[in-house]
Length: 93
Length: 488
Ligand SMILES: Cc1ncc(COP(=O)(O)O)c(C=O)c1O
Image 1 (cartoon, rainbow over the protein chains, first blue to last red):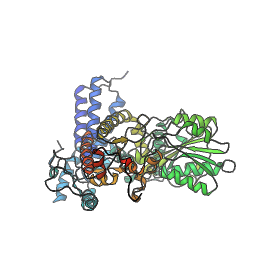
Image 2 (cartoon, protein in one colour):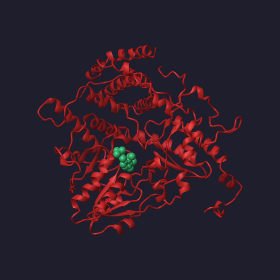
Image 3 (cartoon, protein in one colour):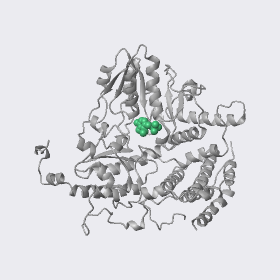
Image 4 (tube, rainbow over the protein chains, first blue to last red):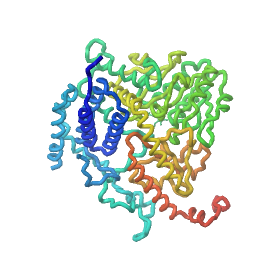
């Protein structure tokens, strides 16, 4: 029916973008949540060999836009680090 | 210097944003510079709140908690770490009080503070239409999560307003012939207080007791229903102990007796599966800020078939089917809708995560001697763990735990240090109620935080017990109940 297809390298690039913006959150809890979420989700995509439909691809693009904007906003407001966070930790990889 | 550092750090972000294709993200570009000047929100109150640092009890705490002597083996510091290398802001473990706003929710809300500012009730132009459309989308998300029709969702300012609306609304509409309401002793203050108000208006209220698990007895409920009962109001998940009441059985019994069933689901909505039709729920209170949405926002579910009539509390322009007049707040409504949508799409992941962390926390805390879990072990929402630590004052423990944001069992009345009426209803004595602490775990809690809290609690419970003469007697094998206390 459709000629829509996403290649493995395209998925890998998408995954790396998610991980990159997730790790840019200043907020410890949000950073760890989004890292956990996208690591788990993409592992599942791979393991279960999920077919990427145009809808799924588009919704991931929208989610990535949200993550880009929100990680940027997170960097504009600073609060003290949590008691579980090392002060010398660099999380912007 | 701080400012320039920030600009430096914000710039690369703008560079990525330039690559964005979507209109909404490019729109963000034009505003992205301005917040920099405000960015020195290096908020001082936050500093002082956390001033106690990694557990070293703060100045006001030292009046109640003796400090360990120098060189003593007991220390408030966690032995494995150097506190100077770590931050000072406490871990947040009070998810029943409120939850952090999900960044995805904030993203939704910002559109309405930056461009979409129309009054959703303005029907003559596009500004009104676009916010109205957003509101109806949100209404659908909120309804879908409980298998309701969007028309049955009335937006309000939160669960407190919903509970007032449901109780007073039903009572006053049907009050000519039906003058009796049934509720339970462990309801939230806003339900109990609304009932008290209705009592003054001439209604009779039955407050059902709960067993030691925190659950109501169905036979009690059946016996309490009378010919003139108009409403049964029983909460879904308790905010202090997390127990889940037998909703389906209550719903069936109410339907059979043609009595309306209202449930306060502030702590349950999106966290346990709820189908208003399967459970025969007629009215349900929902709060947005308990599901990672904005504060000051909620919804009342009001069944249409069979129809539930309520007398509105707020009269005016007739918005929300005349049940709740006043201009809706599109940013809050849309944020709430997005939060509800996420509760559905993240349900499996959230549930698995919360269950795993809660079990770890619970198992470790209960492995400390003389502790007990409050409320049913089976019928519970796992993200609320309420534990009693015998021979320790809950308030002292909280003082010694400045590095963890927690609440004692008496959350609602914490200003008065009154022990929790919920734990009392379970049959706990004052001492036990006073030694209880509630741990709330959510979507954003990490395992690292739970591990820290387990260590911190274990150490400080042991430390405080070492100071307790009662505990010393217990260790020597003296039965405390056999002691005749002077002055009693
Ligand atoms: C069970 C219960 N009902 C009602 C409320 C009040 O909700 P809101 O803050 O939305 O008014 C709360 C929260 O404190 C709650 O836990």
